[in-house]
Amino acid sequence: MNGSADQHSGGDVWAEPLPTALLVLADGTVLEGFGLGATGHAVGEVCFNTAMTGYQEVLTDPSYAGQIITFTFPHIGNVGTNEEDIETISMAGASGVRGVVLHSAITDPSNYRATRHFDSWLKARGIIAISGIDTRALTALIRDGGMPNAVIAHAPDGKFDLPALKAEAAGWPGLVGMDLVPMVTSAQRFTWDETTWSWPEGYGTQKAPAHHVVAVDYGVKRNILRLLARAGCKVTVVPATTSAEEILALQPDGVFLSNGPGDPAATGEYAVPVIREIIAQGVPTFGICLGHQMIGLAVGGRTVKMHQGHHGANHPVKDMTTGKVEITSMNHGFAVDRDSLPATAQETHVSLFDGSNAGIQLTNRPVFSVQYHPEASPGPQDSHYLFDRFVELIANTKKAA
Image (cartoon, rainbow, N blue to C red; front, side, top):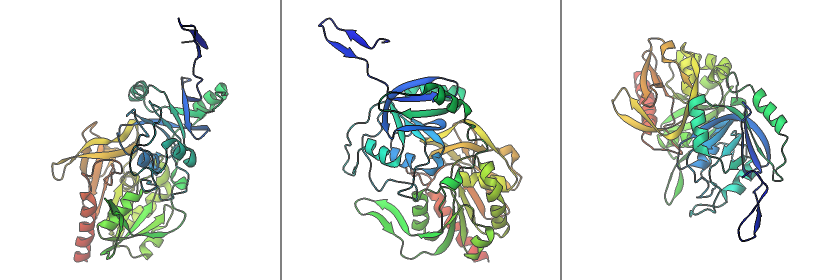
C-alpha cells in the first residue's frame, strides 16, 4: 500500500506502519523494515548465513567483523541469549559484526538457559538489526550478484538522510585489502584452561595438560581454545602481531593459527613472515579459517575473494586423506587458490558445494590447516577429530626429536 491510511468497509482507519530501519545497498537499492537492537547506522559487506541455530555464537564470532549478516532462517531470537554462548574472547568488547538482517520480528525467549531478550542483548552489544525483510529475495540477490556493500540504519522516529546513506554505502571500499584483525585480536598475552560445555555441569577446567600450544589470536573463538584444552594442551594466547622470536621463546610444542576477519593478504603483510619462521623451525602448526589462509600465503600461495562466500553450519567437506565426508561450519569470504600452492602443500579437504579448497598439509613440515570451523559453535561436531590430529602430530614430533 502506498498511502498513509486505508478506509475499511467498517469505517475504521489505520495507518501504515512507519519503517524504522533501512538496508541501503551500494547500488542504491533501499530495503525498508523495522529496527531492533542499537540505533544509528553502520556500513559493511552483506553476507547470508544458513545456520538454523546458534545466532548468538554467530554474532560474536570475530570473523564476521566488517559484515552485515542476513539469516536465511526466519525465526531468529526465539531462544533468547545467555552469558555462556559468546564466542569472542572479550565478553565486554564490541562485536565486530556491523548489523543483522531478519525476516521475522523477535519473539519472547522460550529456553531454560535464556537470561535476556535478544533485542535487549543486541542493544547492549551495539548491534543494529532490521526485521521485516524478504531474506529469501536478499539471499537470491547475493547468490546471483555477490556480496554487496551496504549501510544498515535504525532510527525509531523513521527519519533518515537517505542521500547520505546511499553515498556512504557506495563509497565504502569493501573488504578487499582491509586488515580487520587489529580490531578483534587480544591486547595482551594470557593463558586458557576452560574446556568444553556439557549438561548439566557447564564448562570444565583442564587439570593436567600434556603439551604446550601457543595460539596466535587473529580473532579466535572461545570454543577453539576449549577444544585445544580438552585435547590436553596448555594454551597460551598471544596477540596477532607477536613476533616469531617471542612465540619461540615460549617454547611451544605446537602453534595454532586462529580464525579472523578481513582480507588475508592484508593481514599477511605482518603475519606471513612470522609463520614462515615458525614453519622453518619445524614446530607443529595447525591453522583454521584465516589461519589456513595465512599458511597458504606463507608457503607461496595466494588467496582470492569469493563470489558469495561460505557462511553456515551445513557445508559438506570431503577429507581426501580418509575418504570421509563431514558436515561442517563455515564462515569465510576469501579462499586459498589451490592452483597457486607449491607441490609441498597437499590438498586434504575439498568443499562439496563448489569444489573450493578446504584444507592442506605440508609434506615436508608438520603443518596442516582447514578452511572451515571444526570447533563448530554453532554447527555439527563432525570435525572435532582435527584437534586430536593436531595433538597426535605434536606427540609424534616430540618422539622423533
